[in-house]
Length: 323
Image (cartoon, rainbow, N blue to C red; front, side, top):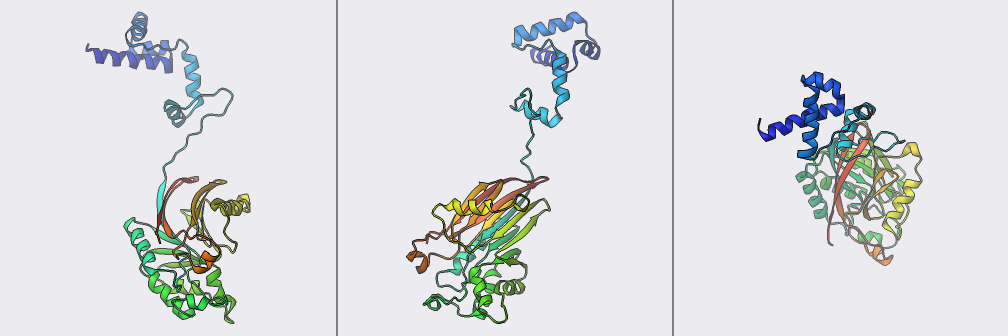
């Protein structure tokens, strides 16, 4: 018998010993007891392999774990006496790729439509399934002194039509919420005009989820929440997201949180929530510069892997515009 074949035969027999014991092995392979003894001695002397003399212990271990758990142990997991079986984590799942934008402020002189077009072009190239927008779709019209001079498109109709023209570059689903800038039209109008809802109605595949926040179900197993808010920037980029997550009750927590309003980008894992600061498409305004507030101009492409128990993993890329 060739050397390799002989070695494989010995290993096959002795592995069977570990799982089933010597008596069962002798019957299964039709061996003589002395042949089995010789195999064990050869394994130890020639191949430096020693088989346990206590197959009963091996059986008990095997009985205690599932096939998946045994595979995890074989790949480096540890059996710890007194603790529950090793959990097997499956990081696979159905990938959903989406693009994330927020604070486009369309109608502002500080928003360059070309930045939005470049983002949409990248979303198409990367094969995004849909886009999310976390509010301040339009610049709106506040009563702040001098604000009218910062508008490229003045008035409800002009900003609505400009937004529809820009966002129509995207031909798949887009989910949107409104922010505080969009809300100015509702506050200052007797008719309660909702400009983002109006924009969504005029787009081919848009869905308006509500003012300030809205939820999207991912395959019925995870929730993606869009949030805008009315608070201000924090000194630490993560702090706003931390406080927001702290305010959520356990049963109300989403799997993914994509936020707008403060024009900051960041990716943090807080209380088992994948949190994203969406950044912005608008560049730093004169008002922001006066308040010493930085603008993180750019957009996200995010891959969420949805498994039976929710999100198994997330990968993400932020695309900055160096304005």
